[in-house]
Length: 57
Image (cartoon, rainbow, N blue to C red):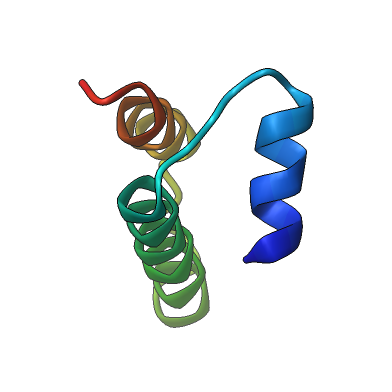
């Protein structure tokens, strides 16, 4: 997670620990769904949730 935080900070974003935890859960959920249901991909929805978690909706 440290490297992800550094990447976001380099992009000018300052994510909180809570935002990074939410990001981690979203990415883990996405990976799990890709492994268990390969045809159920929703990249647009994933991007929307990721952006929402970083900007605080």
